Amino acid sequence: MRRSGAVALALATLLLGGCSATLTGAKGEPVTSGPPPTSDATPEVADPGLSGSVDDPAYDIALSEPVEDSYYPDVGDPGVDALHYDLSLAWTPRTRTLEGVTTLIFRATGDAESFQLDLGPALEVSAVTVDGAEVPAEHDGDDLVVAAPVVADERYAVEVHYAGTPEPVQAPTTRTDFSTLGFTITPSGEAWTMQEPYGAHTWYPVNDHPSDKALYDFTLSVPSPWTGVANGELTSRTEEAATTTTQWHLAEPAASYLTTVAFGDYTSTTNTSASGVEISYWVPSGSPQLADGLERAAAGLDWLEERLGPYPFDTLGFLLVDSQSGMETQTMVTLGITDYTMSERVLVHEMAHHWYGDQVTPEDWRDVWMNEGMTMYLQGMWQAERAGISVDEQMDSWAATEETSRTESGPPAAYDPGAFGENNIYYGPALMWHELRERIGDDAFLRVMREWPAARDNRSTDRDDYWAWLEEETGEELTAFLDAWLLGETTPPRD
Image: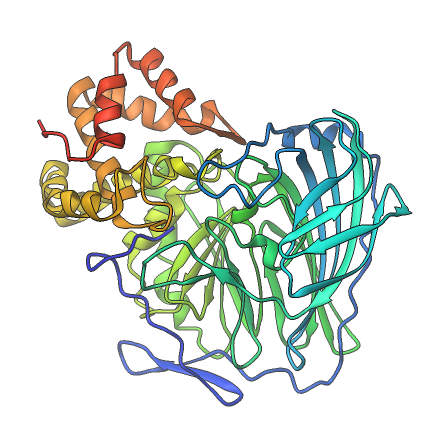
């Protein structure tokens, strides 16, 4: 997720009016998102059904040990280990209606008379089945409780039919660039999602917690010429009866906050990094100049791969929406529309999250610093190189305000739960990593920086595991050092 504050790139809000959306780029060219579909057609939602056995070993890659979050315990259920979501969604811009069928394959983590998923109250559930048999379910607030007994370590397929106009939820933050999470609808009927730390449940039934990674497939339908965009590889695109349907496949497990969908009038272009990664860019139709700045992402990806190793996924894409903020989602970076001379440091930061945040993910939101600290440090390395200064000098410039952010929002690993995503989880941990680099030397530091994501490939884990791994790999006793930087009320002295 992009950091906040005056030192961050300012992302402009898309100005919406009537049936089209327009803003002006730095050179005065208009930026248009395209008109809404003229067809009155209502797309039909496909029933994904169950494509194979719930015991298919292909789902084993998504086995997790879900936990209850220490910061936001009202979201997620440790009794459910989601393995695969098949999401079939139809969006009707004219009526602002989302129709959905979600088929979830999950493992029960214990014996229980019922199980629970998260689903926003604005979505009305019409039917729930477990292994093909209809079962009773109670939808109270954000909780969908399914009255079907489950047995520990057995796998089940639950299918939920639902519809409504999704509503985002309040974000636990004081940041000014976002205040809500989840499914967001523009006045012109476009829709997009961003949901860190939670908010996926505003548009599909889900175990909405980062400790539970799962595989995903998406089938998205919307009146033509609009398009549905999601995570992963675009495997199919068809147009029939004034409806465009796209299918997307995510080949490796993702946390729910790292999923995304968007519906709008998009045009896509591609280019390729030096290592051969094809990068796609989804920008509002009629504004191809927006891709000009984004296409510098290939150079940024080359720089990251030199330091972190091969890009860890099969696909990479960038999606522009009318938000003031932006965040990485797995294989896709969702950015608010801004000056089309897009800042490369933002692109580098968000792409770095595909290693730190996506490949390896914190299992509890208290440890969001595990994502943001290293991506911020990598951004600092990149900025120093581009500016022709040392990393020491770059860290000195950031250190000037770190004490203030720590005082305002709390220590990076013990922050105020109502101040999610503030500057304290970015700059303090970035300074900490630089101090560790000074302590153990460049070779050792750059090695552990590179090796940690692959050491926990496709897993969610916590600070205890991370700290123990660092001590084993470096041969250093680091408990006091890490405690001081991550849990201390004041900024430790710097070397």
